[in-house]
Length: 459
Image (cartoon, rainbow, N blue to C red; front, side, top):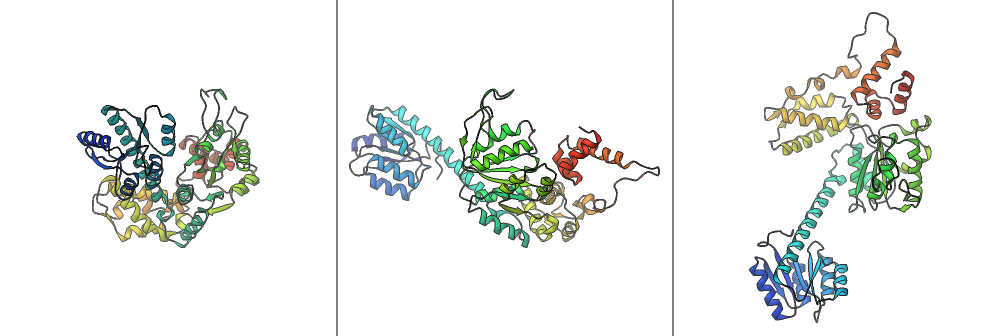
């Protein structure tokens, strides 16, 4: 039971072998609006604690049969969410320290007054409530990202799940490969939250979204004054993920210099902040992801071969949606239900003709494109069913994407280089200069895009 902030609902277990003091405390707590269960024996109190629900425990430290120290440790082992307040003798600092180390939330010293007692209880209840909510959310995250909840039952996806299930039981480094929108980060979270590190942090960083000049500061951290603008010290992503998992998305976009430092971190399991000389030991599992062909980038000397082999101990290839079309119905139903719940509307049924259109569509944006399309259709639909009228024209008639030009060629001769230069210029502008997004849009590698930009003098 989550501890309540309301005194009228909080249930307190009071443990003290001093009958007179216990009766006084019980009276004060009941008068303050708490529900109180009192015990004079620590062992009996522990039995009740293990079989009943309480929001807070108040216990004396010195008791003849089971000491407060034993009660604190055993109660914490049973349920560490419930805060425990220890009653100690005045000036007994060593006992107070021992109690806190054993798992107690706080202590009060005899003699104490009623306001002091109630204030300590109020703080304990707030702490317990926050702790219970945090654990509830973490448990929900674990459930949401458990690999069994990843949608898709095609043979190709079942093979992926089997591989994920096996690697999640280890700390092996994994490289997830797949087109944009196939759900690579979802698979990475599935590995993390299905494994032994699930209670530790999952930290994600998109290597393509961070300027080249800042990526090492983001990854490795820095000390104050390490560079212009470093007004304080900062942990890097490796330190944030210590004990857990670091997900390096779009690893192909990492500059060569940073790749060298990353390789050293993977080899030594230690990281040195910018501006410092002393390394810090870390324990981090690495999962990387890419939508590019890393062996091709190795040939183009834009990706380190030794880093590739270090990252791809176990490669996992996520198939594009067009190669597992049998998953389209279950994905569609899932996104319809989730979108309807998100917007507080009744989930519409889906007409068979819609599924036929979906089966024929190429889905170049993969699962992400399907998810966005379903949300648009559900929100804009007027009826209780999704029909052909709800499907956008670009999806109903995708032929321009299957080979036909979307513009007319002029009758006069053209310069192919000029046309290529203009297409690249417009594409870069559309994507705010982001080279990774532009290269994906054009269907070429980032290094090929950079080569063409240099060729045409595009910045």
